Image 1: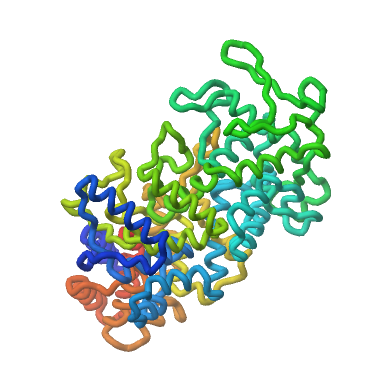
Image 2: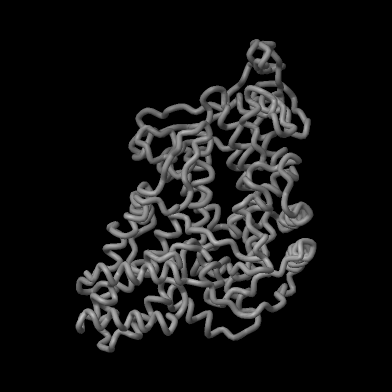
Amino acid sequence: MATFSRFGLAICLTVGWVSFSSAARPSDDYGIPQVAEINEQISAVWKDYGISPAPEAQDFEWVRRVYLDIIGRIPSVAELEEFQRDRGKDRKKNLVEKLLNDSAFTEEYARNWTTIWTNVLIGRNGGLDNNSQVSREGMQKYLRDSFARNKPYDQLVREVITSEGANAPGMPNFNGAVNFYMDKLAEDGVQATAKTAQIFLGVQVQCTQCHNHPFNSWKQDKFWELNAFFRQTRAQRDRGMEANNAMGMAMSLRNVDFRGESGNPSQAEIYYELRNGLIEVAYPTFIDGTNVNPNGMVSQVNRREELSKFVTDSKEMQEAIVNRIWGHFFGNGFTKPIDDMGPHNRASHPELLTYLGEEFRGASFNIKELIKWITLSQAYGLSSKITKGNEVDDPTIGESPKFSHFYLRQMDAEQLYESLIVATQAHKTRADYAEQERLKSMWMQQFTIAFGTDEGDESTTFNGTIPQALMMFNGDLVKEATSVKPGSFIATLAANGDDGKEAIRHLYMATVARRPTKNEMQAAGILVASHKGNTAAALQDVFWALLNSNEFILNH
């Protein structure tokens, strides 16, 4: 192993990488009115602030970005070359349509968005404990089926909120959607209340459990009125069915009659205590003040059914999901955080947020349509290059995002894993879905940190800490990726019998989606020469350096 030269090349890549961009050109809206509206409203803000946007991203840079964001991995060399062969003016639109709708990508699309939403709904650690009430496999199966069929978002929300049944595949009455609530019903459903509002409505009400919120209009009564919708919900352990949920407890979620805290089912109230010690009463009431029949008998009123109608009919839901999806593709939503919306936290582009929410509802809550509008917008297609004309657009210092350049961000750990698999061509011999997820979960546990807050917060990215860096430098996955054993990716490249130049070009395309510069080719040539004819060892060092470069780890 040429350790010094390997680190030297890695440093060269890390420090010397810049974004290569073409000259700025007006962005086409592809005849899609929603794309045209996004372009118009975003550029209006640039004009207001005197901002000149970054030039357009280079083609391969954009292709790498859209693969990462839509299907959760970088493109293969063959996929890059296929895009290059398409010379039509609509080739970006064609690629987005292909990633979203071509059956060849259905499994990867569903896998990526299942990963994203599993982490949103139950967390990266959810269901990984042997004593967990949550079946991660069950949650993933429900979501994977939903995204593979492109289930409308309002239907997904309704199914999750009203879910009943068993948590694990193979159990009678299995319904994977119940795993969202399975571990959130303790203490009278406090977490169920908080997470439902936060994820599906984009409002954070957890602070109002004990007192009025000091910074926004949420009051303590709103929390408990929302909480009353969950008092008919019970989780119970299904003893004797544990074999069906190898990673945790076999559980079922069901609706039960709620007779109220005073024992009168026709007026099934709950009580909560104010900070001054006084006791108040609450009945099921939505956040807009609309209430339902307070009867606690399920045969009379199914409270979660009623809640699902309020949520899916609300302006809050449509804007919350637009904000979340926008934040996924840009690294910043219209608010920060994305799930704390309201008058106290003004959106950066309020008219655009409202417009996209209404259009999303008008498109029957088709998530793929929303993704298409965003990824074909001018702002999404910009370079990450910071210039004098857009340097004021810096959300990292608290400025509201103007989306005048693409915001650099590190890959999610799951994206990194999938990209390593593709870069080394290991995806060509992958096991079945269950085995893939098992191996990925084992790898992910090295990068996931639960901070132990009341909200169960976790780290969400490969964030460059020393242990994580060492895992990249020396971990089993990278060791396997850069192996020179017979039949390995590197050994196959080295066996071509040339001077290694074509293999080096291939490694650059496979990892950072571009061809090496003249200086990089010269540095690699010196490295090859230093190995005195051992091309495989030289390629191993180049590949290792590329995999550990900022340019590989960053989404740019």
